[in-house]
Image (cartoon, rainbow, N blue to C red; front, side, top):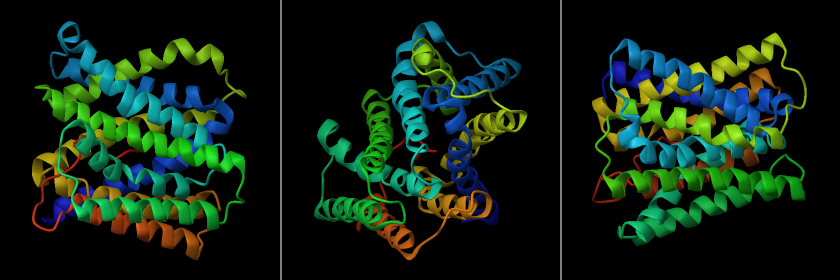
Length: 298
């Protein structure tokens, strides 16, 4: 791996690790749906402006169904679920559970695409589930019904990413990645919009929280997608997915530094188990074929 690619990989992991920090800061004031809407709405406006300046055709009339489906499962639902979880869980928790995305991608690929579910992958799924269970039951957050619901929300978000990847692969959508990213963000904003009256903002957003929302949208969504697609081009999808190994480490670091969240041996153990599971699933013994093609979650 070239040094430039390594720098991009570490930068992307740091950015997506920070997304859990920003969600943790924004969600208590904005609420889950408004947090998700601010993220995808601001990102969509910025990305559509870039597409217009670059004179890239979006072809909404032709591709709107694909934008809607990918937008629902790759942005709208998971972003709202992670924002809900942030009301209860530390940023590092959500990031570790998000790292199970390739595991769900492997399972969904077997169910929907007929991909072979090898013993190695089954073992990886088992280790990953054990890692999450270990984290939830023995972690520093007091075990409660709210914690269980928050964890299930994070798992649901990871499953959504797996569904988005399977849909993209099954339909073989011939749409440029940057165009798909832009169209799906715009679709996500439209999908969330009708539900906003059901979840009003909990309090007025301060100038600092508005800056957090802009950072979440522009840095962790718009710019992050550009970096991720560049890594896919330069390294291929499998190596680009290794960013998922690093996201929980940065999320734990940012949470400790800026939110004074505690990093315990239990959290590190849970993170290590999830990382081991990902290695078993994403890097089969005799093949380097990636199991998912969508973003790893952020």
